[in-house]
Image (cartoon, rainbow, N blue to C red; front, side):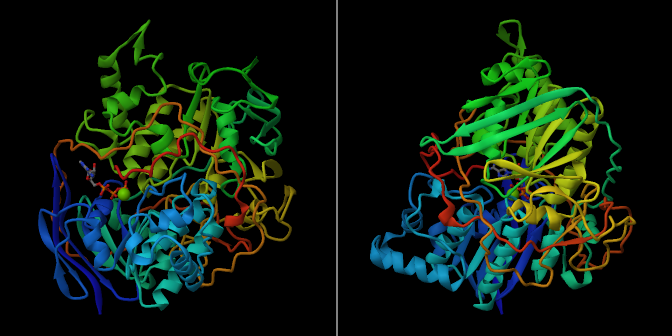
Length: 632
Ligand SMILES: Nc1ncnc2c1ncn2[C@@H]1O[C@H](COP(=O)(O)OP(=O)(O)OP(=O)(O)O)[C@@H](O)[C@H]1O
Ligand SMILES: [Mg+2]
C-alpha cells in the first residue's frame, strides 16, 4: 500500500530547476530515505509534499488519492507532517505551547492537550515533558518535540529533513528506535540524511536524487554506501589521505583555568585548561549541552569568562572584543549557521563580509570595498563549490549544505591562526565533506590550530591530533585518536569513563580501504581516518540510561551579527538539469570512495541523550524571540 506517490514533480526557481521530473513512492509502514548531494533538491521536494511550495508540474497522491496542497494546513489535514532541516520551535515558549500553537482547535490548550501530549510521548517513547521551556532543551530533545508536534496534528507520514545532522551517536540510536515505533504503528517516514551508513541501517528503501532528478532507487540489503555515494554524486569520491602529524611545539591558543558561570552562579564551564599548538587539531567530544557552546562563546568573545585566561600566541586576549579577536586571526565556524553564521536575507557577497568588515579584501583602510568583496565571493563560490546561480542571491536561497560551504570558505579565506570549527561539515554531502576536511588539513599543515567540535565521531577521531572529552562543563578525559574507538569515546561522553582513555584489549584495526564495504550497515563514506560508526545496525536502540549530564546548558548567545530569517527572495541563475537516468540501483561497485582507514567499530554507547529534565538554569538566550523561520 502506497502512502505517498509523487510523480513527475518539477519545480523551478528563477534560474534554477530545483526539481525536475521527480518520482517518489513511499510504502506504508516503512522508512524511505531520500539522499543526494547538497542542492540536489531534497528539501524542495519535501516542501512541495508539505504544501509549502507549489510544484510547477507533477502530481501528488496520498493513500492512492490525488491531492493538491496550497498550504501546510492542507498537507497536515491529509496526514503529512514535516520536521525541518533547521528547527522551527519558539525558544521562549514551553513545549506544550509550541505543540499546541496553531492547532488549538484540536485539543485546546489546557489539560486535554497536556494529556494528549503525554499519551503520544509515551506511545512512541519520545520522553517529552510539556512544561519545560524549549530554550532549555538540547537539540535531541527539541527534535523529539518537533516530532511530537507533527504527531499531535495527526501525521501518518513524517518527513524528517536531516534529523541526525545535529545528533551524537547515542541520540541517533534513540531516534531510530522512535522511528521503528512509528513504523510498527503503520506510519511512514521520509528520512533525509547525508550519513549513508545511517541511511543503510534505518531505511527500508532509498531514492537517490541528483541535480534535481531521481536517478535511482535502492534497497539497503543490496547496496553499499560506496555504491550509494556514486549514485548520488555520479562520480568517484575523493580519498582523504591519512593524516601525518604536523603538530609543532608553538602554542597558538592557551586556555587556563577558565570558568564561566550561569546567572545564578552555577558553573557552566569549570577548570578548563588546554593548549592547541600550531598545526594541531584538538577534537572536543561531548554530548551537546555540556559546555561546548559556552566554551566557543568564551573563545570568540561572545561571553566573558568569570575567571581564567585565554592567550593567543603570546598575547592575553581574555577581555578582547569579538572584532579584535577576529582581526587577530581567530576563525569561527558556528554551530548554528542560521543564528550565528549568516544574514539569510542578505546576498552572498554581503555574507562574505560578515564578521570580517574591517579586513581585506572587504575593507580598504577605513572604507568597505564591495567590489573586492564581490570578486572574492566569486572566488569562494568556485573554490568551495558553493552551488548557486550567483553571488547576488540571498543566503536563504542556498540549500543547507551550500550555506555551510560558504561559511567554511569565508572563514578559511582569512587564513586564521586559530580556527574554532563547530560541526564544520554538518549537513554537507559526502563529497563536499571530504573537501572541507582536506582544506582543514592543508591549513593545519601550514600551522593552523583548530578546536574541532563535532557530533560526528568519525570526523572527530579522523581529523584530530588530540582528543578531549567535555562533560558537565569540565574536561574529564583525553584520548589518542590513533587508538580510540567511537564506542569508547561515546561512553566517555556520557561521563562513564574519565582520565586517559586507552583501548585495553583491541588492537587498532589496520583496515584496508574496502574493509567496510559490502555490508548493509556499512561505514559512511568519505570519513576521515577514523572508524566508521554503525548506529545500531541490529535495530536495537537502548532505552535511555541515566548517563545524562546534570546541567547541559543550552544557551545560545546572541550572534556576532544579527541574523535575519525571513522568507527567501527568489534568485536567478542557470539551471542544472540532467536527463533522468532509469537506473534502479544495480550500480557496479567501482572507483575509490573515500573510506576510513580504520575498521568498522560499533557505537552502541549504552547511555543516551540528555534528558529533558536536565534543563539548566542557564541564562536565557537573548535571541529567543521568534520561531526559527523557515528560510532556506
Ligand atoms: N526559495 C528558493 N529560491 C531560490 N532557489 C532555491 C530556493 N530554495 C531552493 N533553491 C535552490 O534549489 C536547489 C535545491 O535546493 P534544496 O534546498 O532542495 O537542496 P537539498 O537537496 O535539500 O540540499 P542540502 O543537502 O544542501 O540541504 C538549490 O539550487 C537551491 O539553491
Ligand atoms: Mg536540504
